[in-house]
Image 1: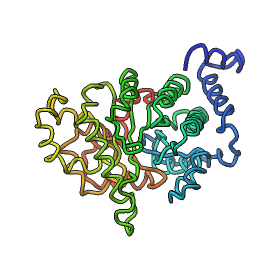
Image 2 (image 1 turned 90 degrees about the vertical axis):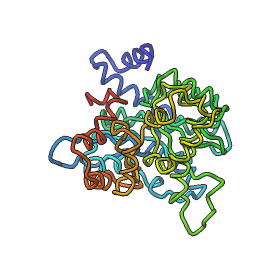
Image 3 (image 1 turned 120 degrees about the vertical axis):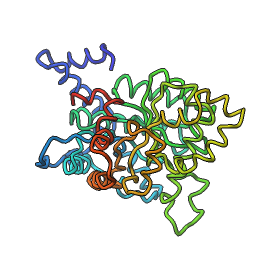
Length: 363
């Protein structure tokens, strides 16, 4: 937030307020200016904190929230995402308190906010981000935010990146793995990647159910296979299109342990060896793959871990739950059962996230 805006907010709060209190109250007032300020009190109520031994310490980097406009949009389109439609801040905090989660980095889930109308998408992205900022202000230290952007509207996306990062002080940006069949390395999104690189942004990529493949096997829910495959397509896009090497200061986080990418590395290696591709990867394929971050959503059973741990350094694996589709407690138990060293488990559950979000060290 700019000093000018903050100073104006502090003046409105009065001279007896501290900077931290003024910042929180002013951010809350920003929400009151938009749709987030029209929420019923029952929506924003949270339960009393659970009494647990020890201080909460986990940082959940894959935790969804739903603004009312987003709930209305997915309900109207019958996306079959009831946990998102029934989400409230209280449900998030209740799950966090039960499972030792200190901070949840909230993000809008798929299909995000663009449904064919740029102006409507811009308004809905703003509503999501102002609600996220209000939650951060109302519950200091409990929430961070990956801001929502209205891609494929590039101009609207750039405007919302500026507002959400500079005014609302979001911790990063959430992108979907594709928009209208275009993946993040597509030339159409070059201005967005350039701006994110300039900001040294943390960028969380969440998979969508791609239009091409929703009904290939009607008896199977699209999320069962397609979300992991979409994540793999997005990783391939940013690597083989050269996005990761052209914009080296973006910190990318990919959901669900990188989807199927770890199991396709032989094929990735073969493509990376082609001369036209190799010149886009001056540091080599493995260097770029190991720069990426991967979360643990849907990854807390024993089967995928050996491959992921051979490919990704422990320092680039982050605790992620996919709440409200899964609980932090279930993920934490699954990770504890994998047999990781205590130091590696602590790194995944907290320390790695602190490297990306150092403000949480004092939260």
